[in-house]
Length: 70
Image (cartoon, rainbow, N blue to C red; front, side, top):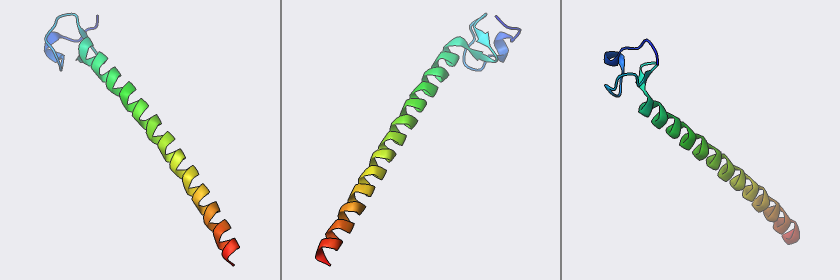
């Protein structure tokens, strides 16, 4: 696959499985972790947007109540 020797491989000692110093199973695992991280980051951003929208709504309702009470 590459000119990386088995001894250079960080995660495993399987011949012909090294790619850029990591065995293929490690590359697959890192890919899955990155995808999971991307999903969680997107979910967090969506939740932050929901919170921001709720804050705006509460602020508007507060202003409306203060206007009525005045």
